[in-house]
Amino acid sequence: MLGRLIAVLLTLAAMPAAAQVGMSREALLGGMYLARDYEFERIVSNPTAGPEGGDVMKPGDSREIANIKGPGVIAHIWFTLSRQRDYVLKDCVLRIYWDGEKEPSVEVPIGEFFGLGHGKYYDVRSLPFETGNRRGYNCFLPMPFRKSCRITFTNSPTHELRRLFYHINYKRVKSLPADALYFHAQYRQAKPVSGGNYTILEARGRGHFVGLFYYNRTNAPGWWGDGGEQVTVDGRAVPGTGQEDYFGQGWSFGKGESGLRFGSPLYESGEKPELADNSFYRFHIEDPIPFLASFSMTMKHGMQNERADDYSTVAFWYQSEPHMAFPKLPPADKRYPSRPDASVSPEAAGAGGTGIPSQAIE
Image 1 (cartoon, one colour):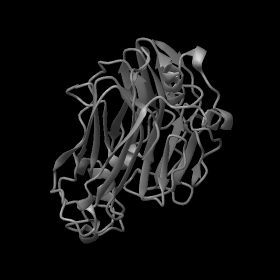
Image 2 (cartoon, helix red, strand yellow):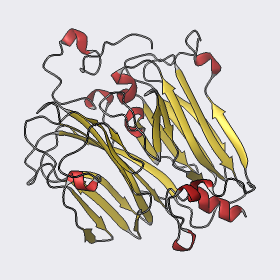
Image 3 (tube, helix red, strand yellow):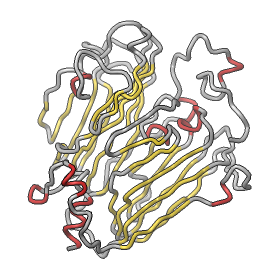
Image 4 (cartoon, rainbow, N blue to C red):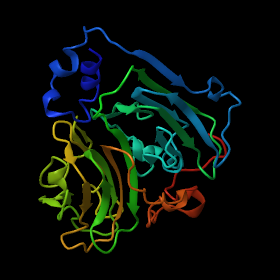
């Protein structure tokens, strides 16, 4: 019974062929009446983190928000942070460590992890990630661990933070299937991009790729979507035809679209020719891309890599440990646009140069 429940839990990530379940209402709800053989647990934020509370994080502070003994499976992560400021999304960093590892398997700025790129707030309505009221950030991707799970939150290096709220819902289980793999999320950027293809992910080991958030900012007029992705699985090239094609759309992108598997929740290029911020996602729910030894994914920036736009991405995948070393996370002040809006004055720019006023404590 336990093995069956764990297999259902890991459906979103991909399962062995014998246990695969189609993504339908029946698959999601059909087993709701079955008995569950796990203990539900939750870790929550300090109650004094409220508006009048005294639990203030100093600039640059790092806090361990969860340290859980395994085996278990993270089922849902929820955050809400502060008021609507760009630096809250771009400066604060989420890290997750599995089974006592020294380097994290998840290391992503908090906004980009939950699909909110460019320091902006908008609606995301995918199956793995959703925002509530643009202020509640939710992740439903299952994250199994055998020995331990450690989660940390690092504050902005330049601002204090008072309002830090979170839930970590997890399932304490007796054991995990032998082929259960570990969740990973990696942030990369090139601001601006130059040279050859932009690298989204390079991985080594056994695993499967399950999707990404892709954020770009156009630094010049003209169409930037041709060229598309290039995926290599165990040395074998997988063909692609264009950026909007990979993200499930055609002949450009739709504004404010949020599907269960793909979307363009922020699309400014349809309204202005340059300095437009765009956010896209694609999740391989039915079609995770498995690899036995290696996986890489890159993206062209123009047909011949001729454009110099700002790119940043968050790749999501599961794999056996150990994983390849992550690229060094860029400092907070380097995660902002290479070309701020010309209409933004230095006085109004705040920490990130995007025109959102800064305040000492949020």
